Length: 278
Image (tube, rainbow, N blue to C red):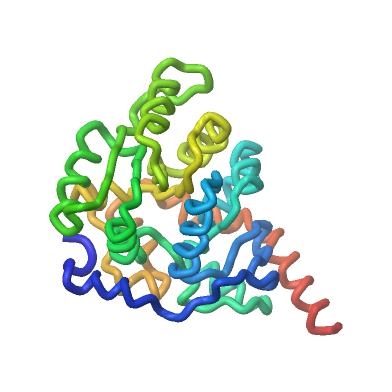
């Protein structure tokens, strides 16, 4: 079973120290993309505030792949422009931000697999309604069954991600209607990058007030359909090696795409030099 057992995850009730107020310097531009240097606790605090106010909000995440896609796809750029909070899902990206003078630390790495136990403990305790869109047919059902084994009172709904997601398509509208009928507090969208980002951006106005997270293959991991990298690899920044070893088709993503960020990297270095000079 993914993550800690229920007895350990109950420790989430004892929140670790975190800032309740955002600081301007915690939003930074690195390699051409804006992102927020936040801990998971700060993400939950932000989410709770939006839910209490019944505001619609998006929590995105950046890694090297998303920064590459953003330079090529106008829809992905539009999605990140719409985001209210952007987590950093990459230790190498955090290390680069630190190198160019930003106050990034390893604890600023925020991914679903890193905060899932705290998240579901919090969602169950507060009675939050969570809807998931993504995965192959049947995957979400298995994921929910396994999640209920640890968090039996969690309120979860789902729809698979294999539908016609084109704007105006009947299947797409049916999914949006199902989400609205469930009236979630939190919407997890896991259809892989960039499809999940494009879907949220296209359907944002039609979706009900909730906080939307893009979570990739989260429910594939929960269902056991995919094997996540050992969690110790994440803090070391080598999780990508496990993904590449288990899926060699990702070789271009991990060996070629980063070179397309050389231009933004030089911009970062120049900006860092100017800050030091001033």
